[in-house]
Every structure is written in structure tokens, then in C-alpha cells.
Length: 327
Ligand code: SF4
Figure 1 (cartoon, rainbow, N blue to C red):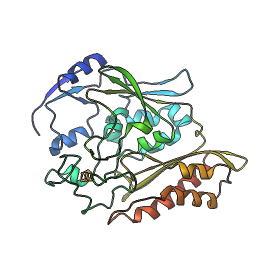
Figure 2: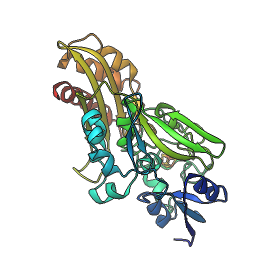
Figure 3: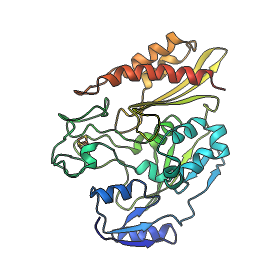
Figure 4: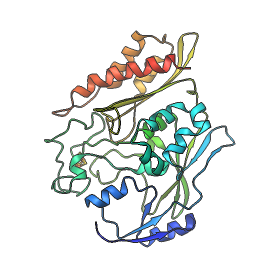
């Protein structure tokens, strides 16, 4: 690892000022330090944003909650309001990483984590457009079993690794950002970027932008929701496919629905056609199977990941079943 400068920021303005001089934001460090050790990224300076007072979860005037960017993943998952009003978020977070990592990783950092594509993580591979723009994509003709089915490009077929973000996608989260030019907010649906011609960019943040919070509006899905994660081993593994599902059900009939897929795209993948197909239908296997077909329609498979289409269909059906029977 290369040597680097390290400073503690006193407050948000101080952090922005230090970042403007070239420093990279450092929160829990659970992904950034790995990338630095591997030589994937080599910042000349880090600014610690752990003392900015962004470590609280508060109720908002509109009935939702604001999760400070510095709240640890463990604290989010175990918070009373999250467990009772947004259980799918708690479930998604607890499905990821390990207890030790969740105790260090922060909500903001969770959104900022980078793909675990092996060609990105291993600098001995010459071709990775995300790590070395213009160098090609090793996964396109190489090992791509875990890669994208939706929204990919000829430049990159990587997926985003966050479980938390998939749950946030069905909760219509809004990311609050302090930019050098002032505060702004970005809907989670607009936060992550598909690769297009420039996969080096993962999200809508500009230079020096700092995530300060994640706001959740009141949720319809406090009762009927589920996060299902399918992976190669039961713990400490990223999703091959995951599904966040939320339903409202009145007298056995579905009245609203939200479904997001993880492990299949560079962003949490909302499947609006499948959601629409659920409305007004009975909450049963036939309805769920029809929605699952729609959810996976349009999947563009690579040489090694065709299995994820059937896996996705089964996962959607199972997640909807679990959501419909959860109270
Ligand atoms: Fe790099 Fe993306 Fe290709 Fe992976 S899929 S090798 S991250 S360009």
C-alpha cells in the first residue's frame, strides 16, 4: 500500500474543505481499505468523516426516518424504527458481510462500496474499464458467472454488491448530499449509474460530494415484506440474485407492490411490469409466478450466467410468498 496523509474532519464544512484539497472520504473503511491494499485505488490523502455527528437515526416530520450517513450498518439493522417500520431493510443489512464488518461499515459507505468483479479487484488483470478506462472488459469473454443480466453495456457487465441498497430501492429512499455548492438530494432510483460508455463512474455524486443522510418516507410495507438473498454459501458472500419485495394486501387481494432485484445489475433493479401485474390479483402462487416471468423478461445473459434467469424467477416467487405471509 502506498503511503497517504490522514486527517480528521471536525464537521461537514471541514470535511468538504479537506476533500477539495484532494482527500478521499474515509468512513468505516471496510471496502476502501481493501481496495487500497490491493492497489485498486491509491488516494494520496484520506479525511476521516467519523466525527461529523452523522451517527443518528431520527424520525422526520413527515412520518419517515432520516438515517445519518455515519450510522453503522449494525445500528441501522437493529434500530427499533427500522425493525418495526422497515423490516426489509433490517433483513437486507443482516444478510450481508459479517457482524464485525457491519459494526464498522456505515450507511453512506454501504452505498459507496464498489463492485467485487474479480477483474476489478485484481490489478494483475490488464482489462477492466471500471478500474482502467479504455482497457477493455475482462469479464465479457471471461469469468462472468456472477455478472449482470440487466442494464449492462459492452464496456462493463459488473453488478453492485450492496444488499442494503436493494431494500432501499423498494422503500423509495432519498440520498441527501452535501455538495461543495450546497445541499441537494438524489432519489435512490437516480443515485446509481448504469455503465454505458463510462463504467468508471458508479453513481451520481460529483467531486467532493459527501453523503450526509438517507431519508425513508413512511412505508406501506411494514407488514408484508421480505428480503431473499441467494448466494454460493450461507454467509459472507455476495448475492447471485436477491429480491426485496413489499406488498399491501386487502382481503387476499394485492393492492400495491414493489420488487427490486439485486445481483443482476449495476444498480438495484426495480421491475415495474412485474409490480403492476400483481395489483388487483390474489396473493397466490399463480400470481407470483406470472410476476416472476415478467421480472426476468429481457434478461441479457452472458456465457456463464444463464442460470441466474431461472434462479431469479424462483427467487421472486419465494420472496413474494414470504412477504405475503409475513405479519
Ligand atoms: Fe471491469 Fe466491469 Fe468488466 Fe468487471 S465487468 S472487468 S468491473 S469493466
